[in-house]
Length: 469
Image (cartoon, rainbow, N blue to C red):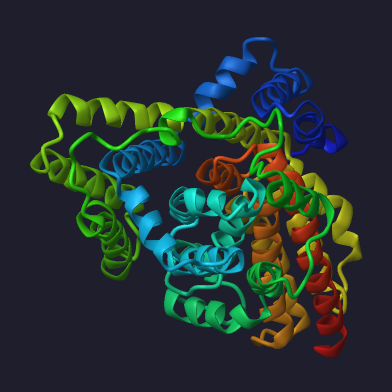
């Protein structure tokens, strides 16, 4: 099937099955696997199409990268546990006697601080704040929400991230944009119009402060944690192995919070940002590999036996396997949706509504639908940006106007929405992993909050569409 072909309504069935089953059964692996199998049959590829799909979608540089990244992050978190680094960090924070509100605000600020990687951010915030938030009786669902809402939304707002480079790269050749520098300038000008991302980040602070009261499933989860002391509901299945939640520090080790925790984190940040500035590409996976090797050497110097270090590394890999399995199946169904033309079908049935006044709003809604049904924000950018932005330029007479900037940000914000609401999204999976939360519980509690941000953003895009013309 060529890139522009579509199977029509049939193309949305696999993603719909995966999402509905995930909520119904609370078993994401089963739901994704069954959806892939049904999708293969619907596309006429036969029984052997399923293993072929797995080989095609997982035998890629993209999946290999996130697979290795996950492994190295798992090892690093295991090393943090084995050296007592996270326990030491928690003890320092406990000495400050932070209130329940302040613990949430610290997690919020930490998420915004690690802005350079939407993959590292939720894992870092969740794993480092989990013990502290548990003691403060904050539900794992709330921690996962904070970690998730300060990852992709922050990354898409910063002009020095891979997100910025990718989105601006898509803009080259559109309207008067001729090169990368002009594209980045336009992207930067569009940042104030990315209302979904801005509102999503601000809402975290407002909910943490209690300015806006909790509502929906999150209110129930927080009440359970606060009144019953249960940070997880009965029967919940945390998306993180016991290897990364119950690993005790090595007996006799003298934990140094700087060497065992802060220094490795600084290595990751320095390499990621440094390579982005010098190579225009943040080498995040290589940054984690370096941090793992350095911390492993430090552990050996501190007296941890080599065999224990290797055993801890293997435990770290094992601990992230639940997330990796879901990521693998998510990549598979994303590839299946691409092959069946899911995004093209959504665009076909909505393109007729495109008018200058409704362009930002309709663009935002289309991007939301595609990102939610496929679980990929970058894929959404690649599909919608080449359609919506040239249309905006045609309405704007080839000039970079408010309508054009709002349309660019509508695509970006709509794509991020899928990162928040779809159980197929990689960053949502990573947020559940970092917080050791039940994945579907995280999705169910976060959807109303993401929906609130989306409704506010949609209203603003509607107003801009009529004001800008």
